[in-house]
Image 1 (cartoon, helix red, strand yellow):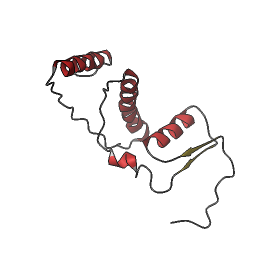
Image 2: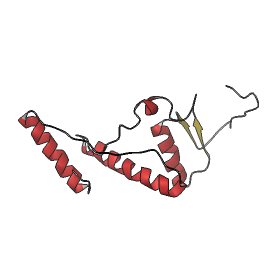
Image 3: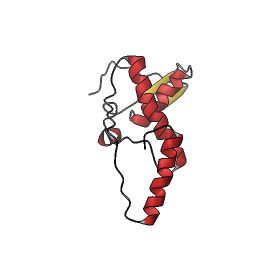
Length: 123
């Protein structure tokens, strides 16, 4: 629903398009850096698109080291957000079990276990 009385700013230091996980994260981090002239544009409800469809699919390890770092940071950030706002993010991390059927997959899982140990996770 469009509000005819709603007036958008004509400019901003940063305009984030899309209120999914990434857009909200960018806006959050910009404001933590002290940016105040920022705007978020979302066509519908926050996190109602792809982010909503991936809900509860959070884990801390990935084959890519950079993605593992990002996922590990994000998992910690959810805990910080809950402490900062007093509101739960609805994150539940029961863990997971991976099985290897080939030697190559076993090797890959051993690498991920080493990453988990490096990041202080419970592999």
